[in-house]
Image 1 (spheres, helix red, strand yellow):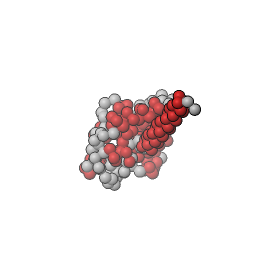
Image 2 (cartoon, one colour):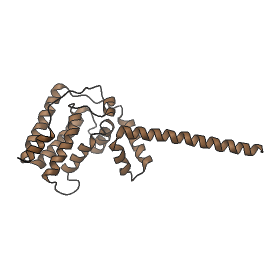
Image 3 (tube, one colour):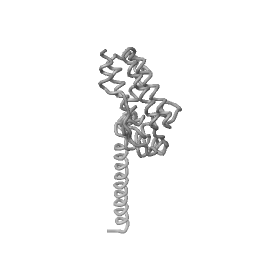
Image 4 (spheres, one colour):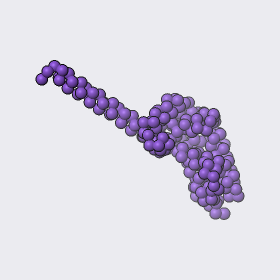
Length: 210
């Protein structure tokens, strides 16, 4: 076997080995992003028309920009205030479901801002929230869409009720009534869970049937 053949064989082996290592690195990176972002990972892939590489670059950029964001945990007084405001939304739902959903959406946006999330464009705020609360963000996205009439139709009372129920899951985490996502706890300044008074699913259900 000539020396050139040996060199070519070695080069091929090295290229294959490097490709295998890079493949393993990218696979672990993708697995890590999938675990961190959960449903937000799949949503981002769909948003990029199935382009996993583009979606992961998007998510990596979010982590780079907002991963170290200092999010202030709410004080006991703030939790009580937030809970009282949500209770008023719940009471309003009985007589005016559409307005209650709009007010809940506005409350969540203000709460996110007060906690330290960006107050610029809505997409910027959602991107930052997706890094810290990816497993609960769907409720916020949903209520934003309904409140703003994104699909161009009028939602039924039952749809509004379900939307408010889903949004409350996000509210409970953001207001400190419930533990949030692991990524969010790591990114925030140590706030621990403290139980608070919030809207329960059954309360909304009873209210909409009154």
